[in-house]
Image (cartoon, rainbow, N blue to C red; front, side, top):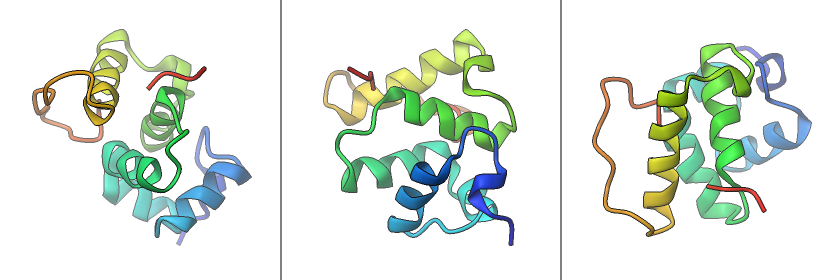
Length: 103
């Protein structure tokens, strides 16, 4: 099993939060996908924001979060907005690990 902190964008604080919601390894994060992991984080840590979702997606894709495409960022933002009740449910994508704003 691979440590969470071995993944791009996952530091000790993010790893601590992920472990608190039951995601203990890189493999578990990859299996859960960024959206499910973000949903779990948001349930326990309401202050997590869109950048966290980008970081999770980047970790799964093994890229820096700021390297995500604009289309991926739009889908992720739509998902985050949906969780905040700002928009209707976003359309499903072929890859559910694709798709909140930090103050």
